[in-house]
Image (tube, rainbow, N blue to C red):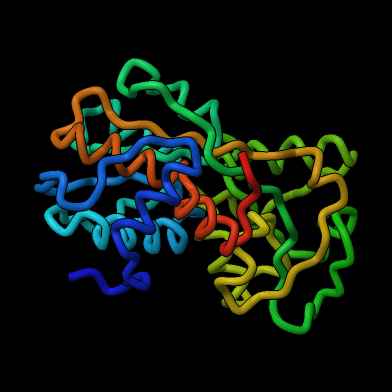
Length: 252
């Protein structure tokens, strides 16, 4: 039984919504059953919990297993090593390209940009990207090989800001956790992450020009290919897009 559940969505409404989203998906009662395993970038966690719950409501015969959430590059490595999954959603197209031979027709379904996260009250007085270079500021970033780290590197380089990070984390959740715990004065995270932690947001100048595009795809060797294709369709359709928008993601 899932801990997080979305409000039940009548089958006819869901089918209509998916249709208007331009994505074909099977209707409830279509015989879909079994388990579905979804690997998703850590930043997608809350939104995909709701999407998974909506999918289960539409297809009662399918059990979406607990989401596997981590840095996109970690998940891609696991998939390349043979980890079983039916669907993969990455935080950038470059990481999806690493597993191109393992997936079918990736498609971008959302976008995201960066913001500066600071502890409540902003004790270090961080006002923008330039302050992240202050020798007295403790700053944490995602590692460069992580999508949020690659975006951070690009954003800081364009701003001409050099940051001596106290740590380089393997996913955006780890950066957020350190800032929320007061272990860092600031960190660069996705704007969608700010609302789900006890942190405050400071604008990162130029972030609107450094956009992460999130692709999703079914795995070629998915153990439940029909359910995987239907899940991808729901993510791309009106129901999935509405949920993603509620969590702050931009349109593809």
